[in-house]
Length: 319
Image (cartoon, rainbow, N blue to C red):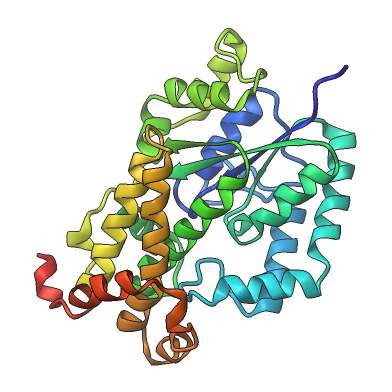
């Protein structure tokens, strides 16, 4: 019996090393279906993104009225509705089936993938492929600083809130498949240990440390000097409640590589319940009106009580 086709979904916020990781996996034999998004100054080594995937996700997000790093808690529901109305699952399934027939094992990466990950997982299962997820982890201040350097538009509060919203949603969605986590700094500065550990955990035999040709190609591909943005909260001024929640979210994410257990998952559940309240407190007026649409009874009473002090903390308390 032949081995099942493998699909690796590379997830994580934009500017967290997802392009680099997808490029590494490609060097070991996983395929990025073409045509691909072309490289640009923000990503000179290339994005490793199929153009169809980017275009499809962008179209779905426009239909939903949602942006790539949308901070609104309700954005997840808007995307789900747009996907159902646009028959997204059938389109993903048909595209995946065709790409597997042409390329075999795949690596799929796009910053917008987070919004549609459950559909991609379901599509893979429906065609008999074995799917797994590798999520890139990078501290929120660095992600926000890097986005600000290369992408204009959103303010820093929305960027931080968007990072929290997307990473909390990603953690939940990736529970449905085998998953692994890689820190950005580890990938850039000492790639072999985290990549081979993730491959072993996810049963990706093609990512083999004995394949020295691939190892040498990856050594040449990864450029540590591309770690160009190293900032802290001192460079990213945000309200104290948002910073506190971002810190707690990062602490939970940082723990995942070694402690993907019930306790850590319970912490993520708590943070997801808390996020709409923090977002409502710090967001601009239109977003506050949207936050009021979140019914209070979806948040456990204990969470509502525990957050009361956090929400009213002075911004100066963040230090």
